Length: 402
Image (cartoon, rainbow, N blue to C red; front, side):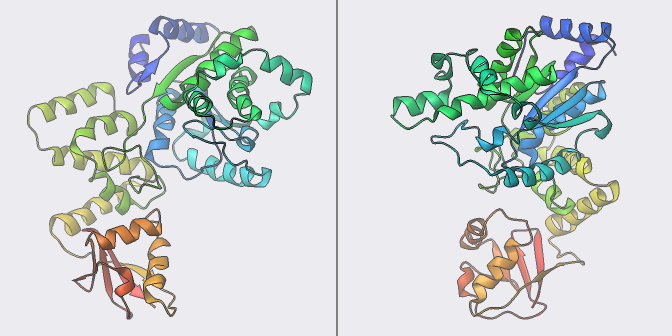
């Protein structure tokens, strides 16, 4: 493939990156050495439930794998015991080794739903960080000044507002940067919120006489509300492990103004095809028709062709025709003295909603019906029986099974 075509695909949807001239040099160098480019991605094992926002960088890596690159995924089992305080106003709680290892297993299983297994190497940074002695730690810490550390927004704000910063937190960006040295990274990807850490990797590589890695910064993806960053706690997310019906339905809720951004960040469509789609929108084509194709494209990345087509038909019958589906999902409810609490626990167990708070809000907003009767307070439900139909929003139907 022509090098300009490779760069076009590499930079699709990217918010910021190393100079193009340096990218060209790195690609040619790898070709001359007859080896694949090594892409590094560090993952924090404290949050193993991946949604489309997390998957933005994984999709970009998959696109680069399709161009011949090798992915080196670094599970931060050692750095996870410190916790990256990025964007936080206080020190994160340290995880135990057991917690980190359990989360890492879940992460590894999920990332391989997106990445090419044959071109992916998973490493744990304890392999090299745990072997360092105190002399090594002092040498590493000498590569960065305290003034440089305090340039990080979160550290700077905490310092200026007299909030505590533990010394061990300064080691997180240094340790993550050393990961780049350990795997001889050619490219590192991350969100724009990881800019400081990733640029630190370039600097540390120079100190260890390595060619500095290229950097690709992916923008943060807004959730279904179109405003806040996609987050499970906010309920504005699309999980990659959600069933096809739920995923398709949520994709259809993407705000019109974010259609192109989702095409760029959440699909593997070629940049030229996305330009054509953007032109169709400018020419006045109904955004809903384009969103139908987007929902199908995203859902098909995580589900079979049959599941995707069934999800599309399900959406048409439920949302466009207003019909309840024939195969209504059963909702198993363990009855207790508080019927509302029993129902709340059962709905949460479907994994369609992030929290009990989100479910209660849907009731309060008038989005829930029990046997076609609107219910605004879940605690007002005092009696349910087998076969009762619970409808949440326009598209979720649940048949109660006591």
